[in-house]
Figure 1: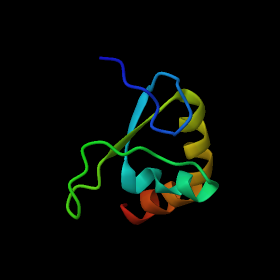
Figure 2: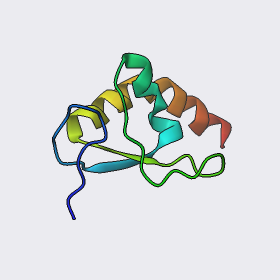
Figure 3: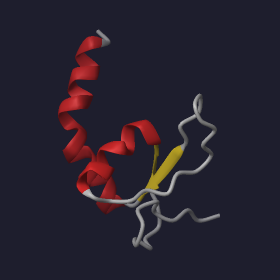
Length: 73
């Protein structure tokens, strides 16, 4: 089954799956996300991103991911 990008209005095929908690940063940029498999409050759900939106997510979350990486050492 092909998954489509979770960003509203994008019809591209998804190539990455992220936790909704990680992908929330995209909503700050004005993008609406469709969340799958959510069971609040314990399971926030997942979102699927196409290559274009995944690159945007990587750019926006770079600082946050670096901090997380350094605190896990």
